[in-house]
Image 1: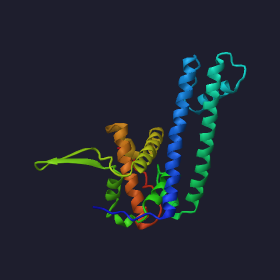
Image 2: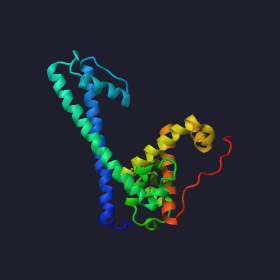
Image 3: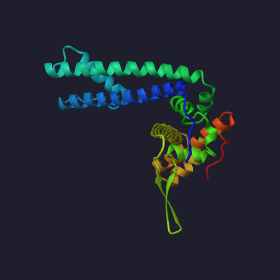
Image 4: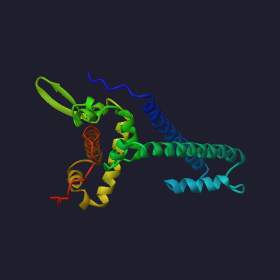
Length: 238
């Protein structure tokens, strides 16, 4: 049994910001999907991404859009207003999290790790009150649920997919951050020889999980031992 130190009221409040933001992000995705689906039924389709949504919102804002029936336009105006409100609330929380990050020395050190942005750094700093309750970075990664699950029987050891036990939110932040680093590694392979070699042998998602595990171990090392992350010297990928 591993017992994690009880969080302070301040840390609980900081994590509430992350939970609230996560909920609002899901709601924003739902509203965007609803807007796209409703307008697609009327034959109005836009490109993926922010620019596509902007185009759809311009159509909704137009009072002279003949392709939108009166009732459909009224419904879409409500959804557009809801999307704007959610985006405003997300922006407000982002500003508060950024202030939290700038005033937290541990969070700033964690941000030096590739793939761990402000969201990941502040979430880890607020979640891990005392990193020394973990004996190693591997224990910390296991607590997050980002190590292979071991299925052993009859003296045979078999490693399966990651356990997915532990903190789901931190695990998702690390995996998403790892995806961002891997996309950059594909664009600039000479700067990421280790990842380039792995991507040549393993599927993208498998490498992403391996990188997320490494990021978790480095994060524990910085919290437990101090210092900031310094990328290793580049070596030629063989």
